[in-house]
Image (cartoon, rainbow, N blue to C red; front, side, top):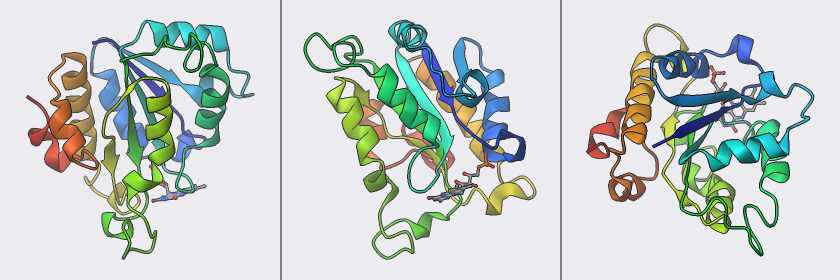
Length: 200
Ligand SMILES: Cc1cc2nc3c(=O)[nH]c(=O)nc-3n(C[C@H](O)[C@H](O)[C@H](O)COP(=O)(O)O)c2cc1C
């Protein structure tokens, strides 16, 4: 499958987790990688070019650090502009039908912060509901995101290596159509620790 990654990190020079993921991505052949902030520093997104990119892709991954329980703002801008009526949804808007929509998300907070009893109050999947429903409205298949919790604590030592290596395996499995969607979607989130359950 043709895999497209839209990566968005407004402070890329300070990144460790997404930087490690990007290095892993570079070792996988056949992935189309777009750094949204580098490509569109003034948010002047080329809608026609990005729609063309979507048309030639089967798997669309948004890779980003969780910011205020949501995406960095350029991903929202991308959604507002690129997912046009008549293209992605509405009358005649079936151009993305059956393509796969997923995310690679790094969270500063630890896993136990997410949930009714945690200090973030909601499960991460609940916070991602707008993304899931956007994919659904665009007739796309939503796939559980690949997630790193506790990114800030894992910056020291080798804490990021299993996550980056897992990201590499996840990309290869998506590209080679070796992901069990049923198993992945039975999990709220895919993590380095549960990858073996979802790769066939
Ligand atoms: C503006 C801002 C908002 C953030 N909001 C959240 C948040 O809502 N939840 C969370 O777990 N971490 C949050 N973080 C922490 C980042 O997600 C974390 O620093 C990032 O995932 C680490 O990845 P990196 O090393 O690639 O920068 C936030 C960080 C910033 C700068």
